[in-house]
Length: 441
Image (cartoon, rainbow, N blue to C red; front, side, top):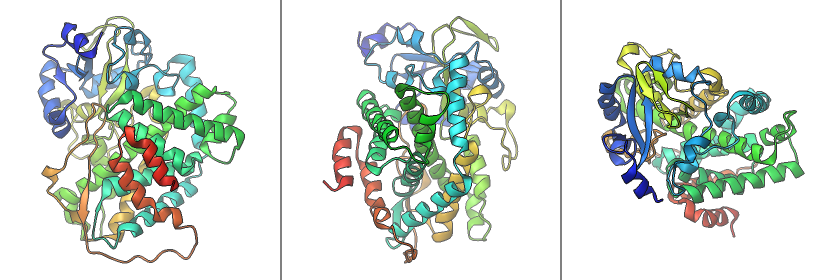
């Protein structure tokens, strides 16, 4: 049965609010506000003919996130009723990954990830962010204009995490290209294949030649993950370290450059970077709708009956802006749900926040007169129900020459600007050409 037939035959299809399309991408908060008429949970569609329940109440979201027994992550029962060409199936289907597992399996996989992440030296990580940020800024500082999303936030996330994983550039590029199509629901089956094949190559490489990197530590962990499990955990880490990270950086930069609450302080020498990050995590979190669970039986949540085997999605953006839990001052307030809660809470939120903070401070310090090249209202947002992500963030500034550091090794960094453009323009179908370009074939 095709997706169209599934949509036409689904009794819940009519009347549900779509979390897809350009209107939702451009104005999601309007959608969330309209959904509040339903109460703590609203009927939505994640793609045409894919019904779900969106939790939009802060307190109800905590109830779900802290109750993995009533709200398990295993999607296999749901999958049985979904057509194979469903566009979000590759994105939502069960995998032996930490965030999609329950009980002992979840504990085992999460322990392997947490233990391996704990071996990442914070000083070395900060140095990696600073070094790569400076190299990228130096690459475009004389142009007077740049797309900060594609040529800075995205590429910085990729370069830093490639170093953490011990991932060669050609493999890392294919992983990110596949991940981008995967998250944006663009040719998801092909995007998934590109990504998983590249991660499998990385695992094979590190099994043969282990080093002091996150991939090698996962392979050597006492949990003894299988190749399939390793591939899934690394794909999860790459997804979280590139897509949400670049979105956090870009969304916070947009806020700092466009909102009078923050922009007015930039010229005064007091950069409210941490306040801007807090505001984004509250009002515009990089993962806007996620933490999907699949009750195995009908469940009552705050007076709403949630049907068995239908996705329950946490609306992080909607829950964070719930009027019943609104905070008058978000600066320094870390009670938002952007990192999740309960047993599946993000294990590396401190590192993610540090990367964003350093990235933002570096570019603002280097280009103090930077401003948006287009009105904020004219910016476009990328599709997909899960993310809150800009298509581009064009800015202009006074050109400035930043001399290279005295140390060698700038050749690959010098090519980073070109890679950023290629990643911005290439879709999943053009990934092979992109990799050939990077190799110089």
